[in-house]
Length: 519
Image (tube, rainbow, N blue to C red; front, side, top):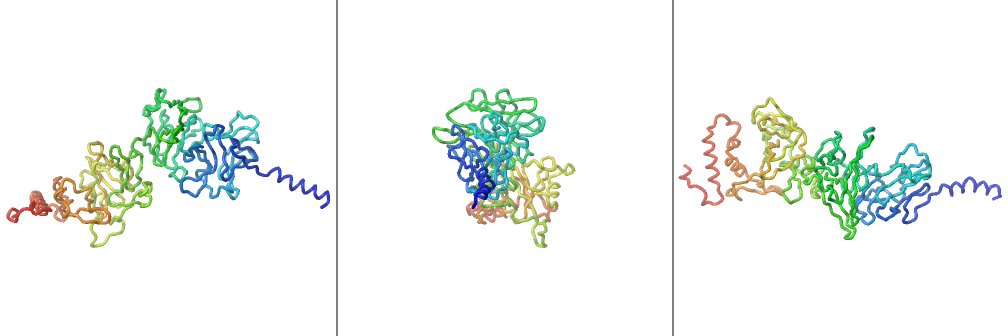
């Protein structure tokens, strides 16, 4: 190769390759500059070694994300860049500062999946730096005091000290915490925390950005009224800042023996938690709501939430329903809700010999809030008939007026004995699903024990006598009557015959009457 050719080859081939070649990060890097890339197991650490940024995969997921976590506690991720656009390969994906000054994430096909998307950057020598506050900042290379972009402006599910949550009065843009979908998917879930959209200076918890189910209380100068843990004598210092363009809250944690964070968890609670440096343990010292049963749609559709005192909340499918995903249900993942075991007759499943649909009564429950009131309906019987003849009616209640529910039933809560505010909900079911679980119906009639039971599936169900016995005790014997005899039966004769029938089927023969007494 002659001299002229060699010069041409170096000038047009080798020199550009050398100039534009990727510079991989050295270990313990603090800054990502133009021309450098982060990939695979490489990370950026904050100067004091508190936080770390890199690729991670949550739980048993096979997806990869760029995130920030505590270096000593890598299981606690505090920020995710590409939470809606996961990567399948971390070794061939890269995070870098682009030629236009933006921080970008490229997948294995060299396609951009996330970017800081700043349109006007005066300098093309920007650099990304991770601070000891957990804030990832993009600085102007010619003036490092100028922050062009910061992750604190775009929180995911975690609120760190010195981070802001607020609203822009001019643009309407909001900073909110949004839960992960679940512990293995950081994509935005349905629960969020933000300043009250109505303009009141308080935080609200929202489901699907439409239903408020928790409130911090109004700002009291040093703390929010429903968060006493933020009062003046606590290590947490909260501030609400009002400027001409923005209202935002910010807090500090003054205890240097631990690190704190606020987390909007996938199940709908906002929690304040600390990481104890000495013992390398984590604990949460405050949550809202205090009971998970107060979380809107905690158990999802056709399920009810129960939380006896000093125990964890649990969900159970309504009578006649079963989990949408038994696997999820066994893992206490309630988001899939429940589904009917048997379609209603009016759904096109009728036959000449088929029994009629009916209603199962749920006692002392906090009724769903999406009811429709029928002002023209004047009695319980009319309310029942309306729901029975309406294919879309899933339940009704009557308390001086008729309320009906169409579609999914959500946000049901079992009230504890002695609690007020509950009511009776009549659940529309197929006839075959009207058999009554012993645990729900055989109350106060213990003498009608094993003789009246049989095992069906994994539950114990009462035969008709067990259910009928309670109706007799409650003086609701008309509910036992065949509808074809309605209006032609003497009430006292029916009551007497029903009581004698129960007397005759006692488990112990010593408790049964003689034939002489019966006659």
